[in-house]
Image (cartoon, rainbow, N blue to C red):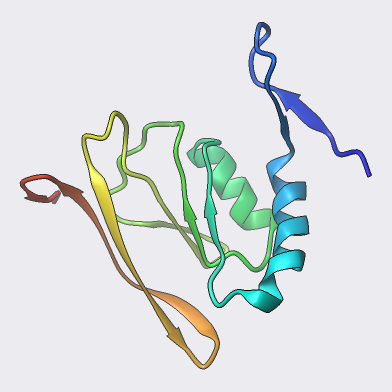
Length: 118
């Protein structure tokens, strides 16, 4: 099956599969073998929101590209989305709770080397 591909820049030789179609396919393949499914993306916050709206079965989205430093997770379709900004200035700590097969976000923090960002 050939999926739609996106060219990211006019001069780029890189092609990427559609993130929503790819996530749907991978979730179907992985869900039976995984307790937690985390989408590690680099498509930007607006596209992470679209991914969360369109795809069931993702437990957490750790996103990048748009350089958003989110001091609290953004929720779309009950899926938490976290991002830590750019250039390794910040890092994130996320704690997930798994209980009776259900995954929930227990805590999330945006941190700098000196401590938590308020």
